[in-house]
Amino acid sequence: MTTSAPDVVPLYGLTDDHLAFRSVIRQIAAERVAPRAAVIDADAEFPEDVRGLFADQDLFGLPFEEAYGGTGTGPLMLCVAIEEVAAACASSALLLAVQDLGSLPIRLAGSEELKQRVLPRLASGEWLAAFALSEPDAGSDPRSMRTRARREGDEWVIDGAKNWITNAGVAHAYVVFALTDPDAPGSRGMSAFFVEADEPGFSISRLEHKMGMRGSPTGQPVFDGVRVPAANLIGAEGEGFKIAMRTLDHSRLGIAAQALGIAQGATDYAVGYARERIAFGQPLIELQGIQFKLADMETRCAAARELLYRAAAKAERGERDLGKYSAMAKLFCSDVAMEVTVEAVQVLGGYGYVTDYPVERMMRDAKLTQIYEGTNEIQRVVIARALRG
Figure 1 (tube, one colour):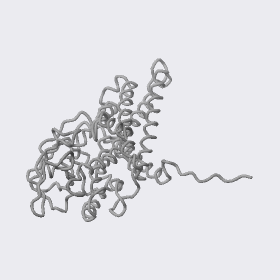
Figure 2: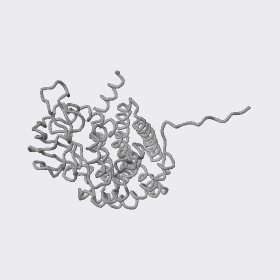
Figure 3: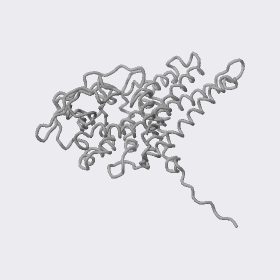
Figure 4: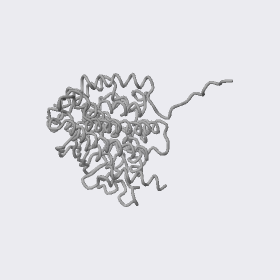
């Protein structure tokens, strides 16, 4: 007697809809984004045309639920999209990753009124978002922040400065973290606010000159008596640190996806180069030393993808160990990106070191993925704390 096997629900994986959407995004990245990547990097140019393209193709809607104008396709599809774009241009991929990061506090803890007011404009790409947590003296330690917000009637007044903020100067909507009770113990005095860029007293004091991700502006927003309505408080007063940590548990996945895209893009380019380049009378890829490099690069990318997709599935299901898995994915994918791009430069030799070929740009871009959204040393702390229980 035989019985049919029960239906097996995979822990994670791409559905037919995911695959179809990935094909569309891959084509957009290859035909419209990749040809612009070198100029975006060389000129440190914010890619306004790519932003418009992503808005036209509804890519900014990927992080959002359908109720707020989004695609409702979930974290895994967002990671796939970021990965595909990053393989062509890491700076352009940050447009999607930061739209997710900058909107997450509102999606996780904002009032329904705030969600209805803000999220549709972000989902359409009309507005770009930014996440303003880090400060000149409070990068990996947000408890040391000095930005203050005080209540005056029906408004909050914000004073201070942030640093290392992606989308500085191009974002329309900033989620700003400030101390509302400096005397509260630990992190209990921090709160989160929604601030529009056209509010009086808001300015960008400087933009950084960076080694990589040069098409994505990073800078220092300043708040000089910026007034926002009380309704712009995100969550309850004093919940800012908790909201920031919940946000990063989710948003690290986007940086992991960006790192993976960089790594896979570098691997694919190195493979193509090795097939065409003739050395010692044969294609470079026929040399065992090169074969071993490429095999290791592809293996690392595949392993990173499995961990990232597993973590994204946990985000979709709301599993309690998401924080640990997102930290592991960000740590592993960014380390892989750095290792793989260094090897890609080596495969190309002297050509890998010049700007005529994209792998030197990919190597510069990869380095930042080990630093932002929590350095990899901080990711190890997060993972170790989860193990400690």
